[in-house]
Image (cartoon, rainbow, N blue to C red; front, top):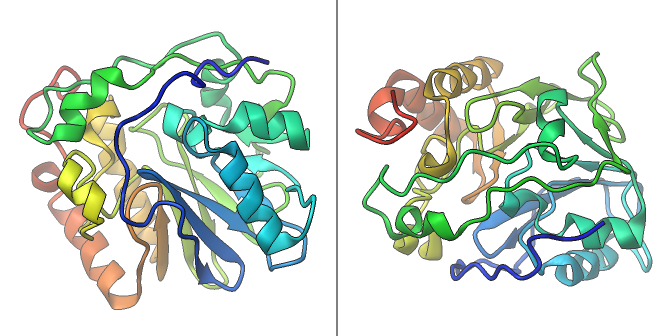
Length: 276
């Protein structure tokens, strides 16, 4: 395997980068520059990694995992919400060390087996600086065919008892979110986020606000809207998103309902190559 993202340095970060924080006793969020990944499992016990961070972040992820789960700890599996560069940036190095199975939606597999590349980012969607920088972001697929396979058809999540995967396309064709009914915890990936991801200032400061999927990489807005409606109907009490600070409780319920009711105004850009 070769990490095609290794030579890419993305010139953006946030105030919380590298500062891990528990969301529940068994969900731990680690921000890496502008994206979040999640360790799911009680400290010192079996665990699963959800998403794989930015390029050049493998050492940081491994170090944090060993702090939480013990020396030489490795996950039961890696679950990918989708395959964009900021969610698989370190996966090649992680697999070289851990050699564990990777799971993603079957529609995402072509981008994870070297068969396809994602559509190019669209810098015209918003006035924010991150959107303007998006042509710098790699859009090609990667090849981890030796390790990756489709998520189970019964919607269970390997290594994550009590969780189910929910197909939430729009940001990518095979995007998934993860939901646990017991405490109504949601790992939403980029189906929606809790920061205005197009603005560099808001990304750096992590100003919390409900938003749709990152505009510059979203290609199917009809599906994206339907995915937000689907997640809102689950009634999550905790939402851990791919970008931004987790939302909980009544505030989450109010904000997610607002996004559902006003998706066209809040989420969909006024113009852009994928808007129509």
